Amino acid sequence: MKFVYNFVVFLTAIALPLLAVFSKKIKLFVVGRKEIFSKIAPLKNEKTIWFHAASLGEFEQARPIIEELKQQYKKHKILITFFSPSGYEVRKDYELADVVCYLPLDARKNAKRFIKEVNPELAIFIKYEFWPNFLDALKKKKIKTILVSGILRKDQLFFQSYGTFMKRSLAAFDHFFVQDSNSKVLLNSIAYNNVTVAGDTRFDRVSAILKQDNSLDFIQEFKDNTHTAVAGSTWKEDEALLIHYINNNATEDEKFIIAPHNIKSDATLELRARIDKKTVLYSEFKQAQFVGDLKSYQVFIFDTIGLLTKIYAAADVAYVGGGLKTGLHNVLEPATFGIPVVIGNTFDKFKEAVDLVKSGGCIAIKNQEEFTDSFTKLKDDEQFRTLTGVINKRYIEAHLGATKLVMKYITVTLS
Image (cartoon, rainbow, N blue to C red; front, side, top):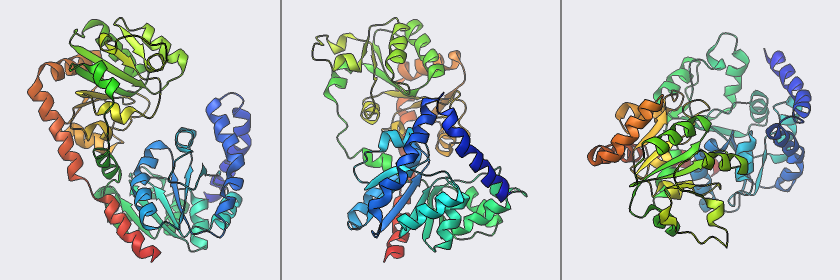
């Protein structure tokens, strides 16, 4: 199976440049990887801590640990690698990292060269990024390696009869910090006992958000003390439900802020064109010649990035996109503000969403009728809205501390 895996990686390396002609995302994936070894060159002979995250969500899990490390180990360099352009393109200028780049394709030659040149003092993989050739290279160099906020599922290759080579690659990890007891049981079942159930570091990250200034004066001006729903990271299927509700059910004492996943001009203009209520784009508001009165608008579309957290802070209820089809986005960010959260009904791979739906803090919907019923009840029933939000806030508070457990281990490792 290892031979088959390496052959697939070889074919992928050939195919990607050809596919890049037809896909902007794949082009970013290919072009960005041409710069990897020049970017990591300054790390030679430095004490480096390497974080690897698949994309933006996993980066958020790494972030509280990075922040702690920068406080305690000021002389160490921080390297962050991403697999996906959606992570790299957003965080390539992250101020606490010394180098941010893509992870090379998991070919043996790439892995050997990368590990040799970086020679990290510690490698930290996030959630479920398991690349066997990189793990083998780390093990051969005897580099301390840990998994943080890991989550394992029974259907993964490690737990199948034909996944022996992947199972063996896990031996590179000196310790596994996992999110739940099920992950620990699964690792124990294949003879890995160096496991701690620490939880998810994202809880520490979102809780820390409450300590920063989340106020935006222009949001308060738009809100004008009116019940406001924030829809974050929405896709077309989410927006279809939202638009129908706004056009057919929303009352004058109800406002909406939409932060779509796709913020390209043609997409946001199309979104606005489908909404019957008075709507303004963030890009229009930011223009010098904007003379409108924000409180006179009922819908505010944010065709920008980086403000969603502060927008959630002003919400009375949140809708988090991706749960109908494409993959649920972060429900913890709005939940930390103690507000109700509505999501699509495909969320079984997201533990926090499963927990919150079960406890009643998240409301899962599958069609227009359920969306409308949920939004209407959350608007009209203040007691229900408040109690639903409290469930979310308490859930966050009950799951803090993963970063502290991981840092305790790292401190011993680096001493």
